[in-house]
Structures are given as C-alpha cells and as structure tokens.
Amino acid sequence: MDRRRFFQFASVGLAAGAAGAAAVHFGGRASDAMAAAPLRSYPFDPMTERNFEQKLFIPGSSGPFGVLDVAGPLQIRTTAATFPILDGQPSPFLLYQTEQGGKAYQNPILRMETGSRLRASLVNGLAEPTIIHWHGLHTPAAMDGHPASTIGPGGRYDYDFTVNDRGGTYWYHTHAHELTAEQAYGGLASFFLVEDEDQRRLARALDLRLGETDLPLVIQDKQFDQAGRLRYQPDMHESMMGWMGDIILANLTPNAVLSVTPRLYRFRLLNGSNARIYRLAFVKGGQLLNFSVIGSDAGLLEKPETATEVFLAPGERMDVLFDAGQAQPGDDVFLRSLAFDPMDNQGGDAMPGGAGGGMQGMGGMGMGGMMARMMAGSSRLPLGTAFNVMRLSVTPGERVSAPIPARLSDIRPIPTQGAAGRSIELSMGRMRFLINGRTFRMDEVSFDVRRGAVELWSISNPGHGMPHPMHIHGFSFQVVERRNSPRQVKAAARFSGGRLVGDLGWKDTVLVWPGETVKIALNFAHSFPGDQTYVFHCHNLEHEDAGMMINYRVTG
Ligand code: C2O
Ligand code: CU
Ligand code: CU
Image 1 (tube, rainbow, N blue to C red):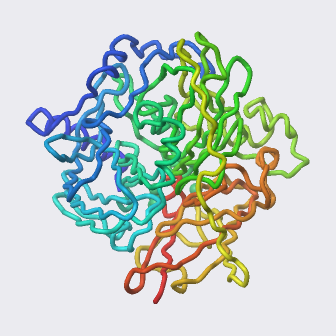
Image 2 (spheres, rainbow, N blue to C red):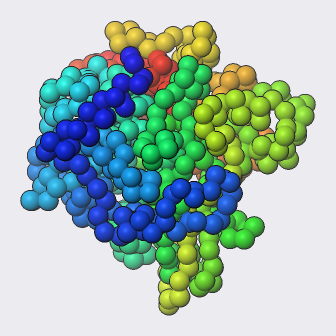
Image 3 (cartoon, rainbow, N blue to C red):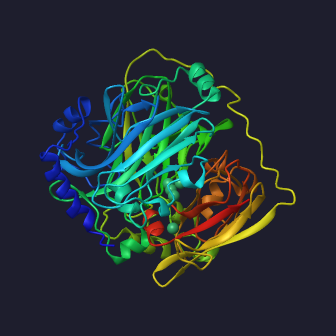
C-alpha cells in the first residue's frame, strides 16, 4: 500500500469539498479561540506553560463530535473533507457524517443505553477501502469490523446488533485492512458512550453533566506541515516503530485551556494516538494533585481509587474525577504527561541510569533514552518526554463538594480455577513485530477457543523490544498479574499481582512493557450463533497495519 496515498487523496477531497461535498469547520468558540492565538508561535519546548490559550473544544449536540443519542437506524458516510486544527488552517480530514432528527453530525459521539439495538449502514464515500470497528463492544464477529469486512469505495456495510456492554466510555474507528493507522490518524474515530444505571447513579450523586462537568477528552499527537496541514509520512523506520506527532491535541485543540470552577469534573480520557503512550498527571506548580480513577476500558470500577499519575496507552480509556477545588481561583493546573523511559528493562537492574534516571526519562541515561530518541523519527517529541496537554484555569466560583460514592459498580472476578493457560509471545523478526512468531494473514486462524471457556493468557514481551498495547476484539478481560515489570512500572504498582491502577476493572487493551509478562483472564461465553473469528492485535496502529495481529476463533 502506498502510504502517501492518503494525502494525495485528501487533496482530491478538498476539491470535492469545493464541488459540493461538505467541508466541515468548527463553529463558535473553538474557531474564535483559534483565530485569537496564531500557531506560528507554537512553542516546541515541550514543558512550556505559556500559550495554553485555545479553548478546549467541547462537543455540542450536533455538528463536529456532537453527542448523538441513537434513536433509530443511522446512515454513516465516510467522507474526505477538511477540518481547521492548527491556526484555523483547513487541513485534510476524514469524517464520519450522519444525521438524525434534522441535525447533521460529523464524527458523532454516539450514545446508547445498554440493551438497545444499533442499526447503522456504513457507506464508503472515500476513494479507498474502509470499515468501522466498535472498540470494546461485545458483538458477533460479523458486526465487529474485522479487517476482512473492509468495503471498497462506494461500498456499504450494514450493522445490526444489540449493545449489551456495561455503561462506559468506548470508541469506534476505522479498521480498514492495512490502512487503519493513516485513516484513524486522518480523522476516522470518535467516542461511543454506553449508559446504564451505574452511570446515572454516579452522575446524579456528583452532578455530572455531559459537555459541562463530564467531558470526553481524546488525547492525540499529530504532525503538521508548514501550511498547518496534517502530515502523515512515516518512513520505513517510523512504520516499524510507530508514528509520533509533536503537537499534542486535546479534543483536536492544540495548547488547550479549560475554565473550571472549584468543583469535581469527570474526564473520560481516551488515548486516540497511533503510537504514543502518556503518563498523565494533574500538576500545579511542581506538585502532583490527587484525582480519582473511577473507570477503565469497559465501565466503572468497583470503587474509586486515588491516584497521582496513570499510564494511558493507545486504545485505552480511563475515567477520572478531578477536584478543581484543590486549587485556588487564579491558579493554573496542567494536565501533563510526565517523563518516563519507554525502553526501560532492557538491561535489568544493572543498567546505568538507575531507577531515578529512568523516572526522569530523557536525562541522558543509557540505552532506553537512546532508543526513545531513535523512535522519535521526524517528531520533535520523543516517546517518554514530558509535555503539557491542557491547562485548567481555575476561576472564582462557589466551592462545590460532594462525596464520591464509595461503591460505583459490581465487578465479579472471572473464576479462573482450572482455567487453561495460553502463552502469547511477542517478538520481532525481519523489521516487524510478531505475535507467536506470525505476521497477520487474513485466512490464518492462530488458535481456537471453546465457547464458554475461561482462559488465562500470559502475554510476554522480550526485554529488548518496545512497549506494546495489546487489544482483543469480541471480549473484555481482567488483568490478573504483571511479572518482571520495569522499575518505573513496579514503582507504580499498588495492587495485587503487581498491577497498576489502570489494570483494574474490565479491560480490552493492556500495555505490555519490555521484559514483562502480563497475565489476563478471559471468559469466552457468548450467545452468538456459530463460530466467531476475531482479531487480537497491537494497538500501536503502525504495528497493527504491519501485521502485529492474529485471528482467533471461538468455536461452537
Ligand atoms: Cu481499537 Cu482492533 O481496534
Ligand atoms: Cu477493538
Ligand atoms: Cu506493538
């Protein structure tokens, strides 16, 4: 596949826009803010606290990323359009367009009640193949957006399934065979929120209102060319390691600021980046502030967990509550990605640099830092460098405080007694990353699992590798144990089995660090007729497209 095709194609999209296909622009506040703060002066000092002046884009009830309460069959059309991100400059962007009740939406945030039925026809208006995958939802294989379901230009795919998942923050994105990375980066992704009684109880207790005090927040890193247009041109090395941006976007807003009053906010964090891992914290001055982790990939945790930092890998979600009342009116709090060493664990405890050096990331330590710099490729921000994502500007207001409910939901541990074990070995061979020694082949099923079986998978990553966020389609899992974790991970492990706060609850994506073995429990019970073939893959999207993916089949 020609990796450059997307941009050629996108310029065709621009022309098509002029000819009548919709070119989409942010309305209202976001574009005003963009006009006010030209990005020519964007500071590339990644730790700068200046220039965080562009109002965070907040989804409304229609238009770009508008919240769409699904009330009937949808037609979703993929379209090449433009979108102003940097400096208000129109940039090529791919969109899911739909409408309901007379309102138009682009990349809508779909919202549904658990137990309700989704009927959607995807119509491919692109000049290249595509398909939608519902990340985290438990659907029959034919509804999942398996790469084999990819449709050509002008093609159509009908989805019809019941959303039986727990209330939570899911997402949907393209899964086009070998084109997922460039299409997702180019725009084809948004949130999918599932509502249930647990979610409503929490929202009532804490006065959480979507779009006001409950904010979906997708964090991405992108590159732009001189004209402010989105750039995606991985060379061979970047295709192998993963594409890194050097401008950090929160809801597509660079240098974002959000005004908050002294009260609790829910942030539904999604790492929508192709390859970048974040180590997120709320920082005031030099101080890390507390927040509560209340949910992970597939819904709420049993109870809130206090944290000061969390790792968030591509594909993962984390729901957090942050109390802005910890700061004073006039204060700035930064949502920051702290430094870390992505390649730690390569040489065991004897590595120069030590734990301290590792924690400080790029402080001229050994192999890890060098590898990270190598990985950065054309990006000015190596993986593991610290930078700010967003500024929270605390404004005067009445202090509102309400206790976070002590119990959020019920999570039953998967009964693993007598469960079969399966080992999944990540490795590298001939310039690509492999799973169990294989690279993806559409017609090859790596293994069968019996319907209703409970299995324990041990996913191991060699010490001389890189971190891989491993993701499964079809089922959620529970993280049981992390073994041989790098020091910086061990240091943050506060839960049984060496687990991190982000490992709690129901997960569909788990980060496996160099040298680690991560054990997960899966229950393959389902009620779909016949065999179901799903994929298991790395959510570093360049790795996925390069074949770091296998098919597995649930039989019976
Ligand atoms: Cu979000 Cu197969 O991926
Ligand atoms: Cu998925
Ligand atoms: Cu990977």
